[in-house]
Image 1 (cartoon, one colour):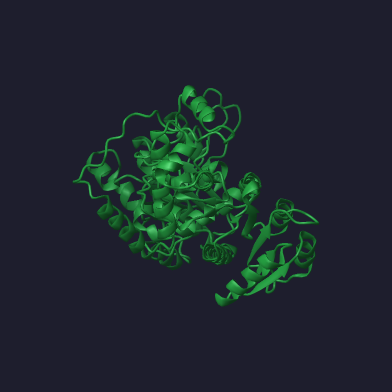
Image 2 (spheres, rainbow, N blue to C red; image 1 turned 60 degrees about the vertical axis):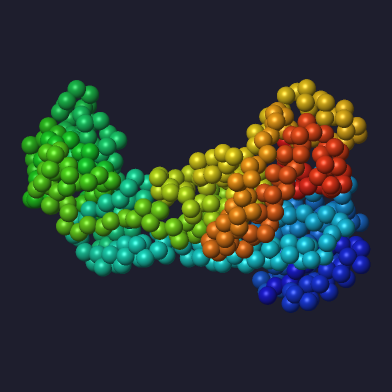
Length: 501
């Protein structure tokens, strides 16, 4: 395992962390300033480079934030923990914008510090595995049995020119399957041409498919080759074939039957050397029964049928897909890829995804732009996935309340905005919140999560502080007194839990 690099000009801090990490069988390497770290990075190889970096924020010869920036330029995926005194917390929080994994306030509780470092190590190792997988990523991803069946079918069809019908819900990746069938077929050297028959107006679709001669209709000033000619020697992918107009179905059937077609307004038959792959999200058998789809065309297209599973049928693929899409989004936007916590992955995995893989990809694009920190937490997910629970307290305060809070806590930072202090009804005796807590913890444990303590503790502390501040109309000192904690403690917790506006 690669070492954990510790950077601090205080020898006692380095000594304590080294000994504690040694007891955890975690190798270390220590430095006294930022210059030493940057020099070591220049000569480090893949084996002795840092697994994670733990750095003080204030040191002679360069501060931790500058070091963070330079390290991230060289090693974007390296987790960096910033150690900071309480007075530096504002700087440490701003470090998140620079990609810090977490900050460690001084003086720190040693077991909690080791727990944080171990969590960063686990995250680093998980990302390394993910990156290795991405390096060899094929055109399609999937470990679920249903997807393995699809991959096997693509393999069996690799030497065939047979017509294939792909069925599956919208957004499930039907075009990716079509492209894979083309790429692994004898026609791979030819063009792959795709057309969505539902996206083109009926009056234009015939010309799009078969082309037209000059003067065939008003506006046809030149001859135009259609998609069949463009796909000559390759593959034509007809997406949403179930929406094709009935009269065009007849023309398509003729091409599939005798291999010839005519341009619109043309009189010379053109031979079509094209493999057709069709796709639909509709029940074509039902469309045939309703008289909306030709039965003979259905049988021509339905030589080999591939059913693509919905994302909810392959939930075990969601973590891999999410990390893949986050990598893709970051590359497209020219930013550092964001990491995603186990809690956020668990929330995504439990979501139904009516929009399937396309919806997951869009969510990952959204998270790349909108998530506030480099590590995506469950609360950062968009509302439709459950990122903002309906039961979460509103954080809208009246201006008068905020002003009163400032005057009440003279010299203190403004309190986080809280809901108007309406009376909060006490929980009824019949509501056994402890049983609910046990059930929630058990559900998380069964889901295989390893952050149950941190996740539930954060939620518990957040609710306590929100409720106390609502009760005191935002006055922190009074809220701390009622909770039985110190003023510094409540201020630190508000910052740690992200309760500031």
